[in-house]
Image (tube, rainbow, N blue to C red; front, side, top):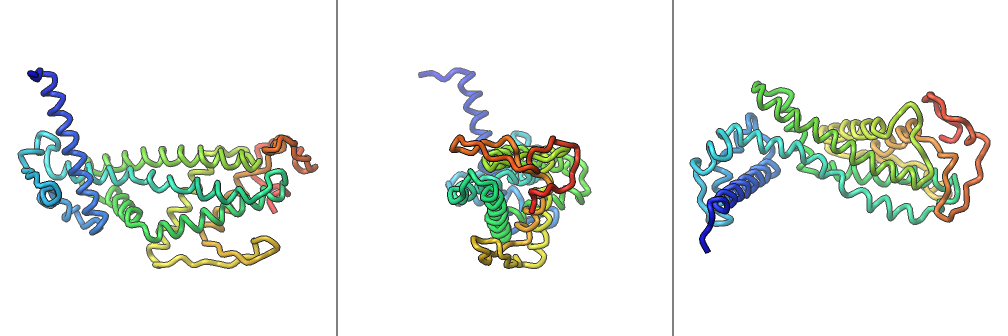
Length: 287
């Protein structure tokens, strides 16, 4: 069968896109293994070409990519760094299963049990996040990309990376807002006015990143023991988990209209039947 001109153009475009994806992934792999050197000096065409050839036997030259996929090597480096900046969303994908499994042990018809469940969600997820970040090469690399974006002398590169970071922050905030909304709805809580769920998510993300930077500097996660388990049993808490509990107490409040999964309405305590006010003071339910 004879190939049409359109088929040839589509095939060429696809092969370029495939080559671009392959080289970006190899560049990302180099940085994950070695870290980000000053000026991205360890991220060169030659190095990624050699990696591809070693794996596939395919030989790639500068002529294959310059003016065809990227303007130059600096443009390629920027593309890899932008991809890493967008990797932040990948950190957010593993927490749902942990929390869902943990909540199965709590009675959703009891207001006190739901408060304990929310606190336990802060502890379990906070501790897991601290441990994951502590051993994450991708997180350390992401911090390096962020630092480069705020310090590079190349305005175009800075603009591209900062735009990618801003876009990813919006994406991650949206992701966590949806997940937090599902969690607090399940537990019979709601966002406290005048805040929004995006406000809560942004605060939680910012606090997580601050704790992570301190962990990178100290090289450890210092755990504290609190009598928060069943019957006052001792449980370990990371600083991030403790901070998350504080944020939860500030941003969330019990929902007086909550109906538990059983379909039986929760009896309303006197302090729960208060109209919503534009007020950020802590309620008596936050003990």
